Image 1 (tube, rainbow over the protein chains, first blue to last red):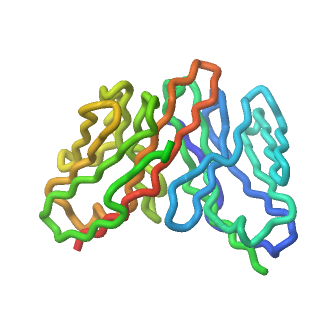
Image 2 (cartoon, rainbow over the protein chains, first blue to last red; image 1 turned 120 degrees about the horizontal axis):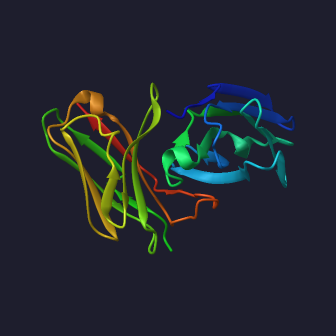
Image 3 (cartoon, rainbow over the protein chains, first blue to last red; image 1 turned 180 degrees about the horizontal axis):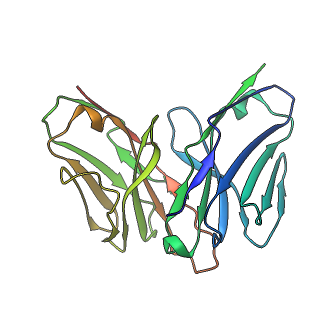
Amino acid sequence: GEDVEQSLFLSVREGDSSVINCTYTDSSSTYLYWYKQEPGAGLQLLTYIFSNMDMKQDQRLTVLLNKKDKHLSLRIADTQTGDSAIYFCAESGPSGGYQKVTFGIGTKLQVIP
Amino acid sequence: DAGVIQSPRHEVTEMGQEVTLRCKPISGHDYLFWYRQTMMRGLELLIYFNNNVPIDDSGMPEDRFSAKMPNASFSTLKIQPSEPRDSAVYFCASSLTSGRLAKNIQYFGAGTRLSVL
């Protein structure tokens, strides 16, 4: 079945850029997403990218997609302490009937003041 | 809209007891998902519904778990009997039908933290 993998932990200093990486196995994935989970809360969509794009920028967030290598990354510029959270990579596509979203295990981002 | 509402936020129970988790999806959404989150396994999809009908329950771990959606605004996840290994955070999420090439955004509730002693 579909699989999404990401590293468990990333630590950066406030003001630096953070890059969270993800790989996925389903070459037919239509959309790829980044969700954010703050302590004690549910997941919230941060951004997404359609599979025919290779980059999307949204303020401090840049998503890069390498479809050939099935690699997705999220770059957060000027990382702030408020960015400390768990970030989930996810995908949806025909393999899951389009409505089902497969999530990675989540990368915990720690921002050091 | 108030978003997806889950209750209770925290539940502590003893092994063998029945546990019922509740979810109210966003009004107008036609898909509802139940997930379980643990440190070891991450976020696991347990079951999802479309227009109140269960579509895929292959993630339900055992017969002790059951889920219902009697109407468009309410769903329950029941564990009977509960075991310590069921301790986790359970999330409900809802979404609106998207076409084959449309993005699928799921909206999550705040979760229910279940502790089975």
